[in-house]
Image (tube, one colour):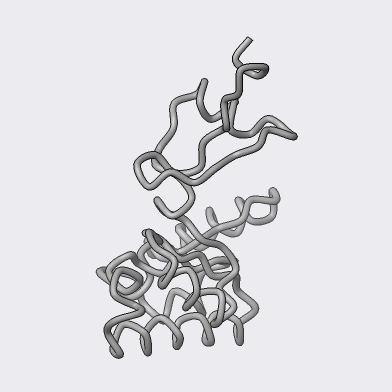
Length: 143
């Protein structure tokens, strides 16, 4: 008889075989376990925001985050940092070669119209602490 973990592994392997990239979310908290790295065909780890929040201020958070990044790189996994909100966090993560960054540092959640406008090529953008990256609206572009 197959266990629940066997079925889960089979489904995840099928998804990966179809070309999907699988990530372990909130790594380092809750149910995310080191054994998942051996058992499941994942390609990314998402560092939980609880470690990222004070990474530039708290030596323990810095050590844990750096260790997760280092371990993931040793296992040929990509690393995504969640909840990045400021330059100090961004600098730490860049210095430790984090692969991807998510958070308000780049943008708060956007509706479809605003997202489309922000993704248009050749649209100059500026940083707003209130709303993240936003297009620069000039007299010519507003028409």
